[in-house]
Image (cartoon, rainbow, N blue to C red; front, side):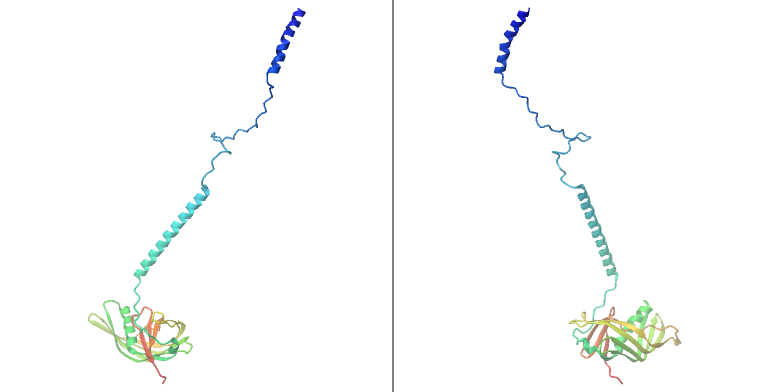
Length: 267
């Protein structure tokens, strides 16, 4: 038995040796670089490497949308303001056309004393009192006596207006009935010239004045009865001016006619 076992070993030994010589050397394969599995989100989508980035910023998109909305609102408000302003301007009475002489001397020649022509004041009185009596009545100016003079300082900063024994008689007619009104004024009024400018045309020649002090006294009689209230009379007002052929023309803002003054020599 022992011999049989040895014989079997001897027979098997050469075959094992030949197998080792004929077979190529087997090497333990080098393990490839180990890779980590991609993280996955809860819904099973891959995260991280290989994910396509968003082609827009949601926050930036919202900001741009809000900015566009603000611009739309601002534009709508501007259009609404423009419409409202246009409606207000359409309701305003149209500014009377200037009736001043086109040519004028320089403003420095305005200094001095000037007397108002009665015809100029008469037109202003009719316009003012006609608005007072209203529609359905007619205001007519009768006789005007006395003087209304102004003195403009050499510095063109002050105007002193003098009512000297000035008196106006008038009649108001409503249907078949007529009533009389007479007004007399004496005293002075002082104005400040805030701004006066030269110019090549009447529109450019402007004057801005302000009443500083009124020292006039007046009496008014309605149908022969003395009135307790003081009747308002036209006053100098800001507007446009011309000095042409020795006459000073002043057209107040909103007035259809101009006051005409001629040189007045001191008595």
